[in-house]
Length: 172
Image 1: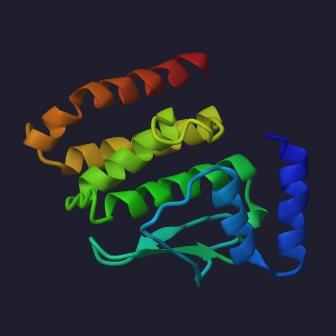
Image 2: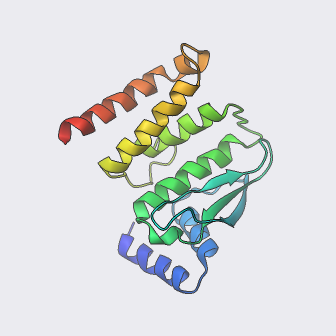
């Protein structure tokens, strides 16, 4: 993928205020689209240096991903990983998957940001963001309930996340 050309296109969308079209362009370019995806809408921006996207819709229904208007002010690799996170939620809430437990959905989505098992075409995050999202993943793992069936289901992945975080710490 030619990131210079990609950034050029995104800057054009940004300059013309076509942020939703730019987001659609990215999910098309990176093959993130899903039949359960309704489209993009805007959400309020949190702060200039904070980014939040959400997949909205009832489980089993079509999902709309809400993005901030300042989405393209952020690092492209971060944006792509955040989009992949939400597009995984779109799949998880589809009639095909119907993952009911929010902790399981979040665990899977943060794990995806670290290891790209569903979307291998998404670029790797910096160690800073891997550490940040790895810690978030472990919070959701903990919320599954100590020794629960869900924790047992994801124990091997948890060990992978812990190893990744330890490797990052050892580099520092």
